[in-house]
Structure formats: C-alpha cells, structure tokens
Amino acid sequence: TKTRDNFTTKMNDLIANYRTVDEEFFEELEEILFQADVGFDTVMKLVEELKMEVKRQNIKDTKDIRSVISQKLVEIYQGDEKFNNDITLQEEGLTVILFVGVNGVGKTTTIGKLAHSYKQDNKKVMLAAGDTFRAGAIEQLEVWGDRVGVDVIKHAEGSDPAAVMFDAVQSAKARKADILICDTAGRLQNKVNLMKELEKVKKVIEREIPGAPHEVLLALDATTGQNAMTQAKIFKEATNVTGIVLTKLDGTAKGGIVLAIKQELGIPVKLVGLGEKMDDLQPFDAEKYVYGLFADLVDEVPDED
Amino acid sequence: MAFEGLADRLQGSIQKIRGKGKVNEADVKEMMREVRLALLEADVNFKVVKSFVKKVSERAVGQEVMQSLTPGQQVIKVVKEELTELMGGQQSQIATAKKPPTVIMMVGLQGAGKTTTTGKLASLLRKKHNRKPLLVAADIYRPAAIKQLETLGKQLSLPVFSMGDQISPVEIAKAGIQKAKDDHQDYVIIDTAGRLHVDEALMDELKQIKELSSPDEIFLVVDAMTGQDAVNVAQNFDDALGITGVVLTKLDGDTRGGAALSIRSVTEKPIKFVGMGEKMDALEAFHPERMASRILGMGDMLSLIEKA
Ligand SMILES: Nc1nc2c(ncn2[C@@H]2O[C@H](COP(=O)(O)OP(=O)(O)OP(=O)(O)O)[C@@H](O)[C@H]2O)c(=O)[nH]1
Ligand SMILES: Nc1nc2c(ncn2[C@@H]2O[C@H](COP(=O)(O)OP(=O)(O)OP(=O)(O)O)[C@@H](O)[C@H]2O)c(=O)[nH]1
Ligand SMILES: [Mg+2]
Ligand SMILES: [Mg+2]
Image (cartoon, rainbow over all chains, first blue to last red; front, side, top):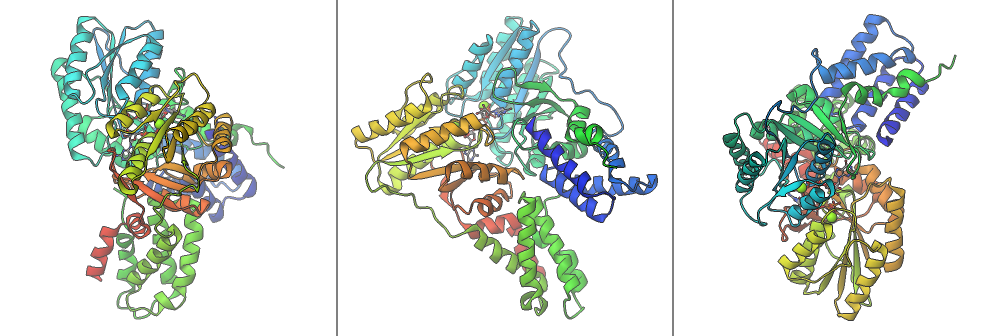
C-alpha cells in the first residue's frame, strides 16, 4: 500500500544519505518515526535501545542496522510473548462482538466487512443497530446488512441502545446465530455520560450471555495522532477492549500510535481496514506490519559499494 | 500519560535556571527542546515544529528571554504569541456571492464531519444571518449518506436536494444549484463524499464539481484529532481545489489539536469554524488564541505562573 511505500521510501533515503551510523542518522530516524505518529515515548525508547544495540554489535555502516531496526520495532510491539491476534469465536453457541470507538472512525463499515467475511465462512451472522443516535446510522447498517445478506436487529432512532442490545441478543439466540456483531454510536472518550451509556450496553449483553461480549473491538482511525492513546485507555477502562481495528490504512497515514498502545496498554491490533469496500478488511499481522514498514530496507536496498 | 503541557515541561529547566541569575544560550536551547516536545505531543507536524522552533529560538536568544528575570514565563509568552499569530486572525464570516445563490462546497477525508457540519452551517446561516440555505446531497457512495443529510434537514426544517445515488455527483451539484435558483434560496451547501487526498479519480470529481458550480467557499473539514498526516491531507486538497477555509471538527474532545497549526502553516488558509459536538448548534467561531493555549496546555500555564 501507499502507506508502506511512503515510509519505506523515507527509510531508504535515510540509509542512502547516511553511510555511517552517527548522531545525525538517529535524529533523522527519530523524525521518520515521529512522522508515522509512533509517539514520543516509544520513539525515544526505540532509539535508545537501537543506540545500545549499535554499540553492542559495533555496527558502523547504516546498511547493517536495517534488520536491527525492524527487529526492535517488532519486539516493542510484541514484547517477549508471541500472542494471538485472532478473533476468538466460541466453539459452541453464540459469539458476540461489540464495536466501540470515537466518531467517524469506521465502526459501522468494519462491521459490514467483518459480517461479510464470516458469511463467507458459512457462519450465520446477525447485526445489532446499537447506534440509535446519529442521523442515518441505522439505515447505514441496514444497507450493509442487505449488501452482505445478514439480518439487522433495530429499534427506532432515538431509542435506548441497551434495549436494542437486549433484543438483538434474544433474537440471535432464538435464531441460533453463530455471530452477533453490535454497532454502537461514536462517542468521544471524554464524554462521561456517553461512556456510562456504553458500559450499560455492555452490561446488558453480559447479563444475557455469561462471558459475552467475547470480543470488544475498538476502531481507531490510522489518521489519528496521539489522542488515540487516550482513546484506547479510556475505552479500555469502560469496556475492557480486547482488540483494535486500525482503519483507513489505505491512506498516507501510518497509525504508528498502535505500537505505543500495545506497549503501554497491551491491546493488540486484530484487524486492519484498507478501504470502503466489503473485502477491504485484513487480519493484522504484527511482523508483516512492522517489516512492511521497512521491507525494502531489509531486503531490497542494493549495496552501493 | 505523556501529555504534559509546555509549562509542565519547562519546570525542570526553570528549576535549574533559578538562582543562577542570567540565562545563557544553552539554557534557551534546553527550553526550546521542551517546546519542541510539547508541540510534537500535541500532534503538530514535525516539519512545522522544526521551523516554528527555529523562529521562536531567534526571538528567545535575543533580548526577550535572556534578559528576563522570569525566562520560563517569557518563553511561554513568546511561544504563545508566535503560535497565535501563525494561526491567523479570527475569521468566521462566510462569503456572499454578488448574485445569489452563494455556493459552498464541503470536502475532506472520510468521517471527518462534512455531513454534520453541512447541517450546522445551514443552521447557522439561517439563525444568525437569516439566510435560506439548500442542502445538496452529493455523496452517492457512502451507505445511507443521503438519508443522513435528509434526516438532518428534517431536524432543522431545511430543504435537502437529492437525486438518489445513481446520478453523478457533478450532475447533482449542478441540478442542486439550479433548484436553489428556482426556489430563491440564497445559499447552497454541497455535501460531498469523504475521500482520500491521494485518490485521483475522486479528487478529479471534486475538481469537476468546482468547475461547474464555481463555489464561493470550499471548506476543508478536518478532524481535530488528526496526527502528522494533516499536512499531506491539507496540502493535497488545497493544491487540487484551492480551498477557502477550514473547519476543525470534534474539538469537544480532549485532543490538543496540533493539526490546526499544521494545516494553517501549509495552506495559509484561515480556520473559520470549529465543531464542538454532534448537535446542530455545536459550531463556533475559531479563536486563534484559544487554540494556541490549547495546543500548549493552558491549564498548566496558569499553574506555572502561580509557581514562578
Ligand atoms: N478509506 C477508508 N475509508 C474507510 C475505512 N473504514 C471506514 N471508512 C469510511 O469512513 C467513513 C466513516 O465510517 P463509519 O463506518 O460510518 O464510521 P463510524 O465509526 O461508524 O462513525 P460514527 O458511527 O458516525 O461514529 C465512511 O465514509 C467509511 O466509508 C477504511 O478502511 N478506509
Ligand atoms: N463530538 C463531535 N462529533 C462530531 C463533530 N462533527 C461530526 N461529528 C461526528 O463525527 C461522525 C462523522 O461525521 P459525518 O458528518 O458523518 O462525517 P463525514 O465527513 O460526512 O463522513 P463521510 O461522509 O463518511 O466521509 C459522526 O458521528 C458525527 O456525529 C463534532 O464537532 N464533535
Ligand atoms: Mg457508525
Ligand atoms: Mg458525509
């Protein structure tokens, strides 16, 4: 994607411009990472560790540092353990997936895409129109339902979202659905009342099905800067987020803040959005994502000497 | 959390300076480092930060800071002044065409808040300026985009022009303007679909709408939470269309909003309004000084002045 190309081009320029690993090289590297929205603390930590590594391995030439950079980034993302990015489906019975996030990040669209992907796996999917607030939100989800060919449980605009969820769970159980995906209205994390409402929505699901919702997915817009950290933190406190969907990665933004979020809060990215169409959803692969940022750097940069 | 305001950041340097008498160039340099970090954490674009800090340093190394007895405060003052100035004056007026209707085009990335802002602007035009706006639904791509605008129109009791989603947005815009003429509406606000600034086909569509409708205003709608990419987005939209102003949305959140500075410095187009909520009355004039304080963390600033 363009995202990667841009980033990689910059990294390649960097390698080409600096033959030796010196202070200037690190400053420029810092700059590249900042521009990817990686976030201050993570950049500092990474650069610090790189400097140590460079010393330890006695690296002098920039071309030898490429793989070290990628490795460090993956390490920062993953920590020691290799964890599971999959969305956990229940072996038996209904799996409930709840979507949360701030306004306009791509919740509803991702629900449509995800429903499509499960439908293709021959699962019986249902959707819950839990955004009763935003103009046209219910209709938007209905269009996706039609497109994908799944049922949408809805109430009238302006009604109580918790009541919609109650109904949706009952219907999904009665109709023996495999997966129920619940939409919620976008809300900014500093709106205390709206966050309370979200907690209530989650509680209704919990009460009706012990152990549910089995996944709470936070949609994050890759274009978002440092505020994404606060979003992740507060939504996690309110709804115990189990994973992130990083949307709009088809643009030029990199969404580098997910590295910091993983590091600080331990929330992994599970899916990435790469467009507005049904098929534009992919599972997140940490190594691919990080190595992708440096792909050319690791494999393709021709040696000049 | 790493979100410290500039004043908090400067505390360390100020402690060191205190009791030292005069401030030297190295002290200023250290303070400038903190300025740089504060701006970066507020999402101001890296390059913009660089040139900004350079400018502020020059002023600081001169008389103002080094001669001051309260250099920390002085740095904040200089930074804030420069920031406010960069942000431009307050310009919340909307153009009026010599011959009505006045045409306004709303453009921007997906989910930025165009449709919501279309409703808010229409409401403002009617309420504050006693105008008769027509809303035009030219987003044929997003599921239920037309329905969304129609619902807002109904809430506001304002007319919405739509032709469904099978006709090109260019045609819809043209017909919408004609409709406004026929009905003696004096403003037309065209809601366009969200698109990536690098999507050439869709950017071309906007150019065509522009050519056909000769808009008096082209507002770029930008999410205040946008990070480093804000410069690319703003630059591309401005290059393609020549935007006339910016609306910064979702400022009711807790983002620092450094994107405002980034956009302003790459396009030099005024930020005219800010979105302060999802409701139709949540649109306010842009205040450069307030924005500067926000980016720097104003709360901290007051506490610093008390401590200093
Ligand atoms: N380019 C691109 N656009 C996307 C992607 N995901 C969503 N969008 C677009 O972003 C806009 C907002 O998406 P929605 O799904 O309505 O977002 P939401 O989070 O449900 O928004 P609210 O319910 O209003 O809070 C729409 O125009 C989508 O088509 C993506 O991965 N790439
Ligand atoms: N809190 C808050 N939410 C806002 C503001 N402006 C818009 N929104 C919300 O942001 C989301 C997206 O707004 P839309 O108006 O649909 O955005 P858009 O740019 O038209 O989106 P597309 O047509 O899909 O590109 C909705 O949930 C809006 O309610 C604002 O100023 N504050
Ligand atoms: Mg939605
Ligand atoms: Mg819209």
